Length: 346
Image (cartoon, rainbow, N blue to C red; front, side, top):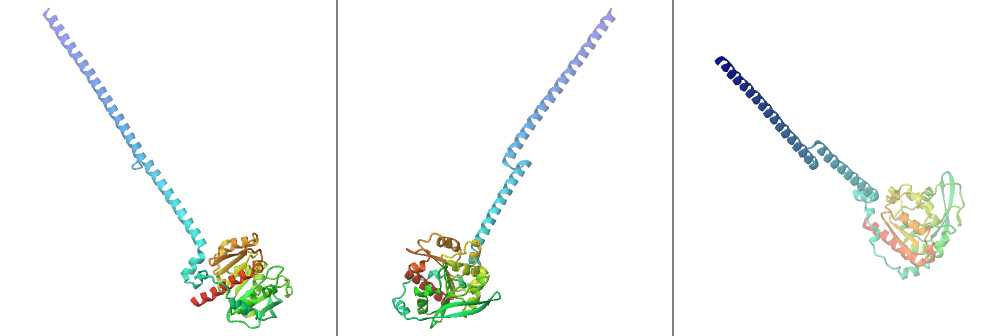
């Protein structure tokens, strides 16, 4: 019996030990599971924190790869746009200031403005003296495109020694109009050489010729008259002669003309403004107040010339110089005076 009791006690002790080990094992499992759960929660919390940190950094454009890339892309785009704007502005500036820039770079005296001289009235004694100037006529012959050209010319019997003035004429007019309103006589009285011509096939005395280049005609005519760098006066239709001559080589025309006086001329609409910006010749644009056709069109196209100035003759129409000759002569006198003063200054 004692042996059975001992065995029972042993079994009880063993059972208790086993249950203890089982409990300890389960406790160990619970502890491990709990530990793993805590680690998992910590990992998840850390991951969330890192994600939040990355999102925040991405928003700030610092360490996030996508954030850095977006920031650099935006900066690059802004820089590119700024370069394009600056380049475009520079190009526009150079286009619209080409003539002035080149002239300043070369220290070209032609950029001295003739417009700085004060406008004065026509001296009464000159007007009186011009009444005694006598006019004679002749014909100038020269070759043009293989053709014999004869040009009728009106000029004073006695020429001055100042800058020559070449007077062309409009459609339905002739050199006689310049004599009737007294322009030839007054210009001679001012001491200038002056020539009024009838262009070929006009209403004047010059015979018509075959097809020819009108710009070349003006160049050959200047040579035939034996003058250099004249002041060219061109009303209305005469623009079809003057403009081809000027725009054939606009950057060098100042070597062929001392001044240009367009009066509501034709032919200014066929060239872009860029061509006119190269013309450094002093230019006095004249139109009549009531000339809303060629007068306004001429002014709008020629005002890109760096050395231009526009004058509007009050109460005058298309042929402003004939409508109000006194105002016309005052303007012409001051222009010629300014050209002479400018030559002395340079």
